[in-house]
Image (cartoon, rainbow, N blue to C red):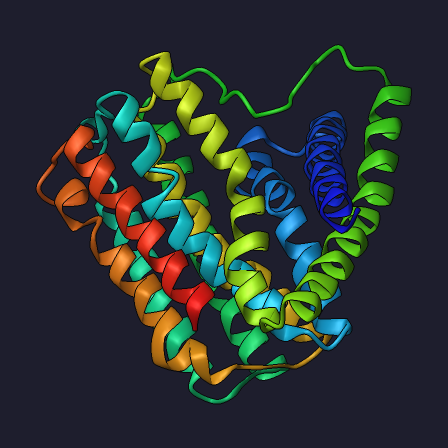
Amino acid sequence: MIWLTVVLGLVILLLAGDALVKGAVNLSLRVGIPALIVSLTIVAFGTSAPELLISIKAALDGVPGIALGNVVGSNTANVLLVLGIPGILAVMHTSEHDTRKAYLIMLGASVLFIALAFRGVFDWIAGLGMLAVLAVILGDAVRESLAHRRADQAEPEEEVEGADPDMPWWKIALFLCLGLVGLPLGADLLVDSATVIAQRFGVSDTVIGLTLVAVGTSLPELATTVMATLRRQADVALGNVIGSNMFNLLAIIGIASLIAPMPVDRAFLTFDLWVMLAASLLLIPFVFLRQNIGRVWGIVLTALYIGYVVIVLQS
């Protein structure tokens, strides 16, 4: 029964997060917020809402291992699993997109996150620091996008995920209500169930956060990337992973740190943070050398992730 509760919590989280994105996007566009700003802020925050609610709930419940493990584990899974499995199925033509700047920013965010972790706790000081860095990054992204748009006046208005110009107001309100009610409900179910599983099997909440919760919250990215690969539309998968990882570190832990302080388990400092950083460095051939992710790379990345999970579960 406890495993069913985990699945139920995860499903509610994912559906509620999708509903919140649709409602917030269409409300914002209706009141006149530019599509560019909506895509860089509301969509980004909305798609990370499940992870954010999990981290806040875990921090408030005194199980920071689930909160930190969810983010660190998700970032590792995003590189090794979300890029690995689709690479086994078909060649991912990541060489066609220039992601060098975004990648360097993600690496910088990773180093900042690790440095703050060695303070021993993610508190309001760390939270404000990470959110300030995120604000600068988003501001620079808006500036670059506006400059690019002015340089090419013929460029069509950006299409925003979840946008429906004909969506009625009652439907917008319904999506918002479903998202705002479903997210905390799903987070409650998933965190409480994960805590029970950790106690029942005698493992730490950190291990559960790094494996069960992290893989669960990475499933939407994995499913999306697999389907795009099968349709031979996976060219932007690398950019999506880079953006998601940066946002996970700066926004999710940044906000959760303002809600409640989160002590850092020593296991993070000696192993998991370095695995996350090493996984990020594995992207160098795809970012700077313009290599595609083919079957060999897909097998290597997936095997590395399986090996990592085995080590974590045995620790």
